[in-house]
Amino acid sequence: MADPGQTPGVGELLAGYAAGTLRPEAVLRDAYAAIHRRGADSVWIHLLLLDDALGQLEAADRHRLEGGVLPLLGVPFAIKDNIDVAGRPTTAGCPAFAYKPETTATVVRRLQAAGAKTNLDQFATGLTGTRSPYGALSSVFDPDYIAGGSSSGSAVAVAARLVAFALGTDTAGSGRVPAAFNGIVGVKPTRGLISTAGVIPACRSLDCVSILAHTMEDAARVFDVARGPDPEDSYSREASGPPPALGAAFRFGVPAQAQREFFGDEAAAQLYARALDRLESLGGRRVEIDLAPFRAAADLLYEVNNLWLQARQEAAS
Image 1 (cartoon, helix red, strand yellow):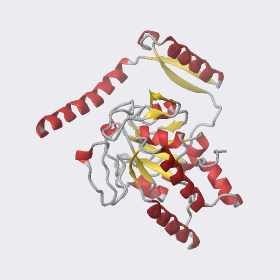
Image 2 (tube, one colour):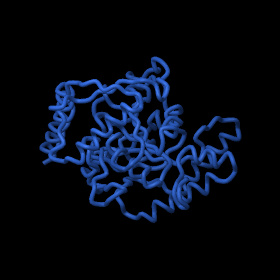
Image 3 (cartoon, helix red, strand yellow):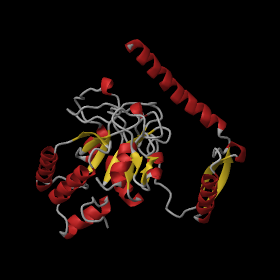
Image 4 (cartoon, one colour):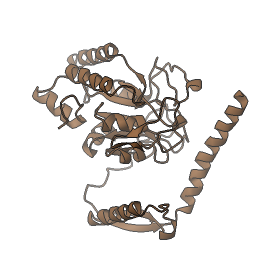
């Protein structure tokens, strides 16, 4: 259970609402109080005014009273600032790029509300959380450690219990890396299961909206609401079948020994080896893979983006 003044996770909130021990308005006010107590921490690029957020809550509650099904009613969440919300600026971490979209991204509409927009590595290209003119973020564990990126603000917002969950994006680790660096869950759904309509692309055929939450159960609740085909996204689709049951046997890929680079960090190498042993103890079977094609694909993605940004900067100068 979250400490007083912190936002509980999705499951805790829904259970508290059902039991009558929590009230959505009080939770929302507490969330804003926690955000303001942290001060200027570079988590937020745009923060919805509390009165506007309360207005959204009131509208959602009216919809519920009229018979609407709102499985996440009263659950505050944050949105990475490369995901559109109608009438709110989208910057992708670049003030010169900012625009106000006329429509809200499909995934946000399905989640029924928009809480706030979080900081990120500019254009979602980076894995540190420091590449933003809106400020560099630190891990919740130590101000001297990076938060990871590019969904840095979304991860810190959840890990600091400012919101119950957050949306990020993940093309090559942008959701999972900051989740790992801040001790929370980062889920990259299979491509196409969550619409990316209204999301600024890094690589449209590879992009995914990621879910950052405190537990896998919380992430699954959000996923069940957010998923589904979308005519506005040509890559969206239904799942081909149910996911395997937890605890079932599975295979996981491991780079060849010669391709594992820890840059002299022996502690990291030992932790990696322990993680492999842990996966095997859960029923997994490691399969050695050649990492070279994945590195080549990463170069195609990130080197092209770097060249595009360089050309844009030269044209502006």
